Length: 316
Image (cartoon, rainbow, N blue to C red):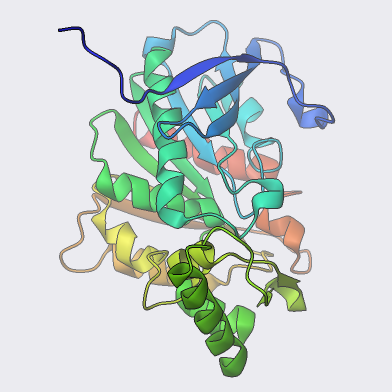
């Protein structure tokens, strides 16, 4: 009997997207290429691969990078950190997950792990034997979820940038701050789920960052935002990651507060935690709080220096 393939992860070379910024100029000794990856469920995953030219892949640590809410691999810090790492001997595979750009607040939290899984498997296929998972902003909880459930020996550490603490709590109490509106969102999301339209936009919008609002689907709201059904709580997952973890926050970050960093570090050090080593760093920034600081804009060198020092301490 001939075996059949039920599903697979594949990748191929891809042309660079239009409109890339100045970060996407590879320095001397660094190669940059673009990949089109197909996840196990057939979803496309675009990626950028930065590699130090003179170092064999089998001797190089690969950082798999996951962007934040509605972000992409060519926005900071996914654009600014890889060339700095590659210049110091580290490779990076920065990906677009299924919630990139216009897909913001529409995805199912549990499905994003397939995008990360696809990137990890491609890294292995390329010959990398030491992997570090990095998540920025919303990507931090997606990386935590994956790392807590995949104890693979080649995943050596986890890097969380601009990481919030408990997203369901934060959504209700900081972003929405309106119990009546939040109940309307719960009711609309549950109705949509019962009707089988959980991947379609709800008829009401979700209050979002800095007084704005956002379109949202039931599958996103129920898996990220409501504490009765969501699993996007970093204080739960971080203690279940049996790897070293580095938390980095910009002092001027307008979206994540220092107490959220403390929540995560406390959970990682709590009794029963599987975490082997956790460190948190707040980068100095004398500028007023801003959205740019959430992406470490203006603090790129300090971020790279912190990450490189941590990687070297771990002998990666």
